[in-house]
Image (tube, rainbow, N blue to C red; front, side, top):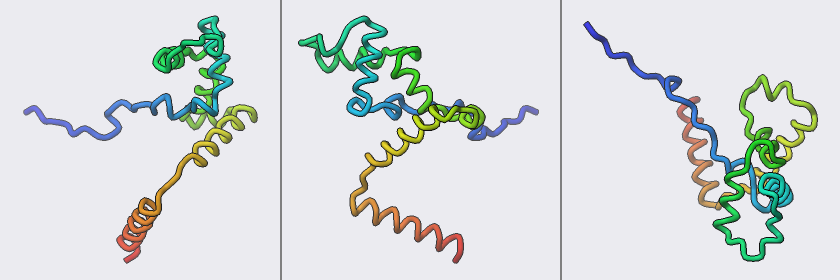
Length: 128
C-alpha cells in the first residue's frame, strides 16, 4: 500500500529575504556609487542623463565583491554560527543597519492599536 507522507514546513526551501531589505538608496549612497564605479568603471554622478531605471539596473546587478555587496552579505547573514564568529567591525555593521531599519519603521495609531489588541487577545488566550 502506498502511503502519502505529509509535508512539513521544513520540507520547503527557505526563501531568502528580498535584497532591498538590506540596502537603502539614501543611506548607502556612497557604497552604491563606489560599487558601480568598481564593477562598471563609471561614476553615476558623471552620467548626466542616467535614468532611474538604468540606475536601478546597475544597482541590482552589483556583485558580492563590491563594497555594497560585501556589506549586504554581512547584513543579510542569518546563520547563527557565522554571526557568532563575526569580528567586531562586522557586528557593528549589522547592529548599525538594524538600528537604521528600526528607525525607519513608523506605525500609525491604528496599526499600534491593532497590534496592542492582538497582543492582549493572545495573552488572554494563553493565561485566561
